[in-house]
Amino acid sequence: MSTSLLDHVRTLLLQAAQTYRASPSGPSLQAVVDRLDEPLRVAVAGKVKAGKSTLLNALVGERLAPTDAGECTRIVTWYRDGLTYRVTLHPLQGAARQVPFTHDHGAMDVRLGATDPRDIERLEVEWPSASLRATTLIDTPGIASLSSDLSERTQAFLAPDDDQPTTADAVIYLMRHLHATDVRLLEAFHDDSAARAAPINTVAVLSRADEVGAGRIDALHTARRIAKRYRSDPQVQRLCQTVVPVAGLLAESAATLRQDEFGAFRTIAGAERGDVEALLLSADRFREAETDIGLSAPVREGLLRRFGLFGVRLGDMLIRRGVATTADELAGELLRQSGLRDLREVLTNQFSERHEVLRARSALAVLESCLRADERPEASALMSALERLRAGAHEFAEIRLLNALATGGVRFAEPAIRLDAERLLGAHGRAVTVRLGLPPDASPDQIRQATAEAIAVWRRRAESPLASPTVADAALIVARSCEGHLMALA
Ligand SMILES: Nc1nc2c(ncn2[C@@H]2O[C@H](COP(=O)(O)OP(=O)(O)O)[C@@H](O)[C@H]2O)c(=O)[nH]1
Ligand SMILES: [Mg+2]
Image (cartoon, rainbow, N blue to C red; front, side, top):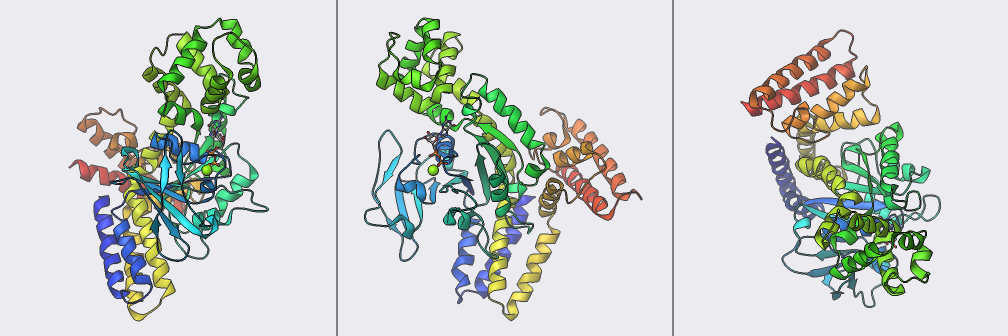
């Protein structure tokens, strides 16, 4: 289904690239054609120190992106799967060039030499990695604060001026606690056009979730409750698909857990419980207090830096209770508790499964801006073809409706109807069983029957004399989605 959409988009782009081959737009159109076959581009955005680079590392499963200070944290950096390890510097002016780097145990250290970070458009890190095969991750410098020095380049990257399309297909937005500025920042890179960042391609992360409530052992429960509250806030619903709490530092360190660290955790878990509890009362205490549990201050300091106070408490508890008896088990359990797997699942449902539609959508945005920038007789035919494609493709209709449901542009009589519509439109995953709310092992007959029932219900809603035109249209789109499944089954 989506394949044909991408094919249509490709054909149209190739025509346009041909028409514009001698103009400045030519190369950018060709680049968009090439991009159709590339992995989805997901940008990690949010304020300074929200934990963006740490989370990116956790998603890759390696420490690549530098965290905290360092000039590279001020540069937009792409991490993509490659055949070899290579870093390319793209300056604002002049040709791209490879730059030397080192990568020992910690993050990458890219040698910029005499180049001023402000003269760099972006760094591109190629890194052979299974995690990067389906998605290219883009680390953005933080947005400092909206009122004063909102980082211009992050802003320019996420929400370019005018009608320029965005560089990323989807955005993970990190926020520590929902702040008025977060809402305004999210709003800043959203608008109503079909092409821009919209709730459909944004997932919010309640980041540094372990720090909620000063790192107490129930921190993540609390964070999950807060995230749930955000999810039901209409202001948040207008801006993103969902909100997931993640302890990025814990996830990053779990993914890269070393045997000596496991040994240190074992030492803690083997010590007298009262002594350990006293030591773990605060980070300062754990770092500095005199103790005879058998761990030197530098080792404790190291654990704290890598896992945070919450992570140390959790690791101690998991080993003490026998939940984790090996380094692998500990890593697995810390990862599970960090929330990273939940985030991955959301990313798969929200982005990976609809990557072709998202990509088609960004490609058409570029095409549209080229057509508008350079008007000529042939452009009008291309523009109508583009509009026909946008209006006609059911995948776009689904995306538009999901956006409209999120932003309140379409309202059904009851919240339950909206939830039903979102599920059928693929908001929670595109698999037909997920859409229908059936168990994964439902039989073809069950699927057929549930689909037929859904079609009947939604056709009735569309034809109801009480339905407003917007609701009727929306109901028709849902019914058509269901009919699509039925055809796919046959
Ligand atoms: N406790 C805790 N600290 C974190 C977490 N994520 C990041 N940090 C710390 O916060 C600081 C900023 O993180 P960084 O990833 O560089 O943030 P960025 O500026 O958004 O890229 C670093 O000292 C990280 O170790 C987290 O999930 N929990
Ligand atoms: Mg960073």
